Length: 375
Image 1: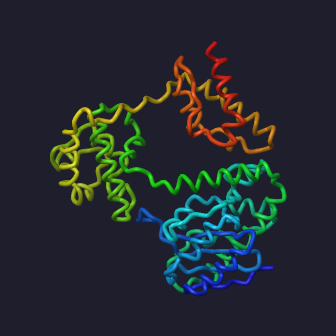
Image 2 (image 1 turned 90 degrees about the horizontal axis):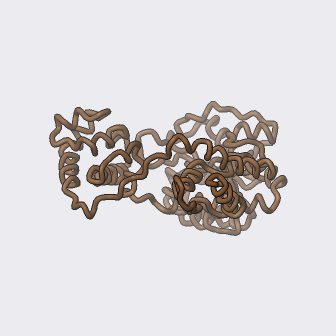
Image 3 (image 1 turned 60 degrees about the vertical axis):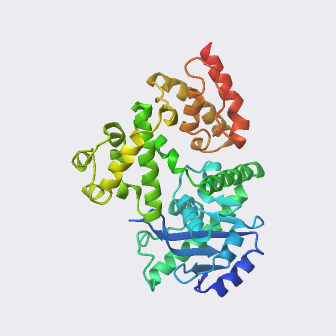
């Protein structure tokens, strides 16, 4: 039986309901948003379920988010979401807070060995035997009023999310639940730390092929691009396209004609930012050598592929023993960082990115395997 749908459209109603929700052991959350031509997501709707009702919170009419912020930070109330990384961005932008403790039902399914990155509809069908409609997944959530179909779709998300939480919780033992909540804390902690624009250059493809002087230019371009995207609330590629960053730093154009010839350079960027980009590049090119970034490390050579495969076997073995999805165990970036710490014949050190239960469970085994491979 479908839950009753209730709208919360004013600050007082939201505050009263948040006060009640803080008396419960858990609530479920979902968001609908638009993110086509903006850097930040635009909230169109927030849905909250408590097992008894489905509440639709209208972000277009609410102005005081403090009660919801308090609820999100209340550690006595578990907040349940599904595949929540984008939802967390919406909540952080809207309320300034993130949910703790956080229970992600997609992760819970992986911890139970049901599958990795399972979509919400598939998981609902798998555990509850319910087929969900998909008609409104690309709906306009900023229109008002919402259609009856939109309301039912949004409410169904939190209605079934509460059922999923209860079904998954019954199957999770205390150890796995603890690990799951630990992953939630790490996700929240990472989102709270806004990335440094002056570190963005490290993620540019082929950056390792640039000289230190060229890296100084790349650093300046990427930092400006990131700051401008945030300030103007536009996607990064609307400022400067990703594929233009590396050739800009390598060729360092001195006028608009040369700028327009850069690979994948959009004419709009030349018109709108051309003069500023040329000046920015000119100034960055004069950076004192003692202020140049350190060279970026080269990608690991192809011969490490068998080593990576060998290390992954440790995670796969643990996943089989624990009946968990193998993808949960050891991320490729973590293993690459581990290999880089001692390649080709140095002393390997566990990277900081291998934390918590994964470090405790598999850290020494990884070091032992690498030591054995050297002998």
